[in-house]
Length: 399
Length: 221
Image 1 (cartoon, rainbow over the protein chains, first blue to last red):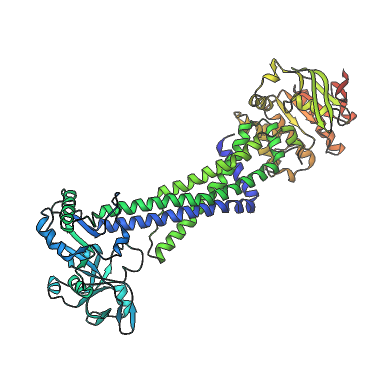
Image 2: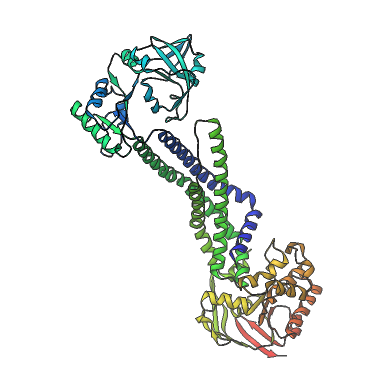
């Protein structure tokens, strides 16, 4: 008896009990749906970050406050503490690190609520030097960006994201507040790539970095962006920056990384997440699988007489076993396919109506189908063996 | 062709019952053996033992020069497929399955060549080619039994084993079925039939009577 005929028999038997089959495969559908949706979300985040990182040039080096651990992962808690980097570090680097370009940019985070008239908005006010825009991947769409001249004169000017401007109902040329300080709005930008999926970066305010230092009444800076002179020397430049700053600070209380290092860290975290997702959703597949085993046992019992007939006309035990095994695998694979279909719809809707860009990869589909096949084999095996081992005479007399 | 020696088979159902109690029988090619006896005398057990659906506790069974004890379960399945054709009292057709698919089944398990031609020939032989697409529940009892006979014949077995083949049919239909068996036998197929209806013994060339698991009469007629 060929596989095709077994498939036909399996489909027919499942169709004959279609309500039961459908209810049984719901467990698998839900399990696979969860796996595929979550993996697609994780993959989407990974790609978005990857795209963001690619926007950086290959010579870009970022210095962050706070020491990294021995694996190179930066201390994210240190981002919230007072920064260990100061404005002086920049001129010091310019003097003592010869592998990097003289133009050094930096960013200073400030607190304070954005306000225009009676409208108020939290969000992300940051003081930057023009080159540090590279950190945020923005594109001016109205007015102008601030210039070196604005920096030198410490002009109280501000560019903000389209989203923030809309919420505050503020236009280019008007004035608005960050905390108690007043700024003139000179430009609008759109955020091309967002590292964060929260709305924070969508609602972003950029002001000249020296003004931010003035408002903070502190020389602390939160990010320094330098570029190695050549692509080849990036790693040497990182080592040099680290050495120079450590000498100045007396300790390595900062982290120097290439954007690709950030990507590596994020990739590691997301990969761990993916394994967790597979692990957790496997539990729902286990539950679904037990449902399959249960219904297959019922099926085998109901079809005892059929098994007797098949044996009487010459079916071997392995032929009977294969028949029922294929039936349970067909059941779980159909469940997996429905799960993948529903996950595709969900991912499509999520991409349309949320900042997420879920992506279902071929690998994810293969994992899902493989999970279906494996569940079908594992949970169908015991019922199939029971079917194969039935005594033909007793089976033929079964009512 | 078939040789059973001193076969014993016990069932434990509260008390021990000897379904077969030292039965010896030889079936030769071309015979039409009618086995008769009251219910519970072991005649069906004997039939199933001959057809390799059942096995004995003691005794020796030879099919040609093959010793049944030496066969693997797979070989037994293969012999059931090629050498024997079963016909049952309750037809035992697969439900929700067309006559055609029921008849072709042994050929699929035997991976026999020319399955379509053989299936058609077999259905034509019992006069039901026109009912090939019908499910068993769309056929009369007599038609169902003829499909079952077509299934038993499709692999051109040497022996047809029939267990009360007319037991579920009215007497007129029963006669039709028996005439079919007569025809099959006339074309050279060995038939072993179990019945409790003495009227059917007129078709047999040899009559075996059983009682309490023993053969009490065995004569050619």
